[in-house]
Amino acid sequence: MTPSPTTTGPHPANPPARSTAAATPAVAVDRVSRSFAAVTALDDVSLTVARGESVGILGPNGAGKSTLLALLAGTRRPGRGSVRVLGGDPRDPATRRRLGCTPQQTGLPATLRVGEVVDLVAGHFPDPVPRGELLERFGLAELTRRQCGGLSGGQQRRLCVALAFAGRPDVVLLDEPTSGLDVTARRALWEAVRGFTAAGGTLLLSSHHLEEVEALSERVVVLGGGRVLADGPVADVRSRVALRRVRLRLPAGVPEPVGAAGAGTCVRDGERVELLVPDADGLVRDLVCRQVPFCDLEVSPASLEDAFLAITGAERGGRR
Amino acid sequence: MTAPTAPAATTAPLASGRRGASAARLTLLHARSQVLEALRVPVAVVGTTAFPALSLLFFVVSQPQIARDPALSTAAAAQLSVFAVMSVCLFTYGASTAEERALPWDAHLRTLPVGAGPRLGAKLLTGTAFGLLGLLPVVLLAAVLTEAALPVHRWLPSVAAVVAGALPVAVLGLAIGFSLSSRAALALAQVLLLPLAFAGGLFFPPAMFPAWLDAVSRWLPTRAARDLVVGAATGAPVPASTLPVLAGWTLLLAALAVAAQRRDEGRRFR
Image 1 (cartoon, chains in turn cyan, yellow):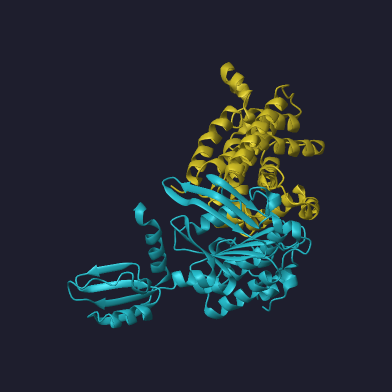
Image 2 (cartoon, each protein chain N blue to C red):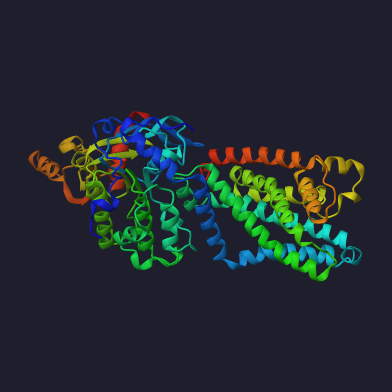
């Protein structure tokens, strides 16, 4: 699985960054809302992705990631607002001719063979990647004759990602591409996807894992509760998302150090205090300098889930 | 669906792409996968072929007064053939769509550059193909165990009539499958099939109907299908209303099916 830009790169007839083409963004989501009965999946979301950009969409379960990707893939319609992919409506099949998507892993037709599934998907595009070449690239060449139901979880996952590239798309949407893969398989898959972005393809990737988004994207959009909570370069968002959990004991009457070193969320239960902070070292230094009488100090990395809750809480403060 | 407002630089490749993947080719592409999937589960194929054969044994072969009369048994076999192909189209390739579109793979197929036409067309194609396959045992049993006779020159018109007659029911199945959840779709298909088949004269010939039922029957797609197929198989006169009724129902129900398919967003969440 070595990257070769010619294989999975965008279609040569549709150069991603020509003067006129560049004027139309790859993805333009304008004030989109979508709800399912009582649940608001997306709430006034706007997002523009330029051609050749690689954007990670990060968020906890139920944040609206999958709904956003479904709107871009044309399988769902926005309740309000407009969704444009390469200037066209993704509900129009002609627009989807330049779009590549991954099926959910559990969804491959169990009785069809790997080669048959690739042929079915590739048959929809004017100039697909030859079957052997595509499967080779994703390490599936020996499995061509196997039925999809008989593949391992990792193999199914690789096939799903490979299908997104079958039609030499200009824009690729990957929904949790490597969930459930081991580290080696994950890195190999990232390598294959990087060939596409290196050749100028536009990538939108939803993920639970900051590491995955860092590996493939330069820009991160954090979704939570159906809204865009943060949008910026990976490094910026990382500092907001990569929080530390600091636990300590403070005697009664000593105020908790909210505000010190950016400490935001704080839970106090008697003497026990728990804080989520971007800079744990800074917080400890501050506590020591101010001679705060703390004890039982414990620092651990906060989960991404905690970080999302922290951001969500901060943004929503007044609404809840 | 209107053409996307693409900038000048990308219009040319888009246009050539449109020609590249024609609707007919996409229809065959989808039909091929559906046939492969069906053949990989042979029990399903046996099931569709067994049912009409059993119906013939119970309704026709067991009744000597029909089985010994060439005209009656040919007409009876023709009626049952219509019923057999219809039920395959209505259930296997119509209402079962409701089940399929809840699956993640169907969601993926909807992200591919293909519109309503080829996907519905492929289902009609596979439905009729397997429906006709299901007729083989009926035709063989009728030929061996009854006095039914189908001269060679009537084979092609009969098959064509069966296919044409099955169309409105097949698109009805698709309209139901794309509009309702899988349980509701199967229930509705079951509720519709037997009354439509009975009132259409697929179990008992319309000659046995009271006048009022015969009058109502002439407006039904099942009756039109029955008259067309019996006419093609036995040379009995086909009423003038048959073709307009068949075409009318087909167009109406096809419009419903296409609208339902376009509206479809897969699984519905509550």
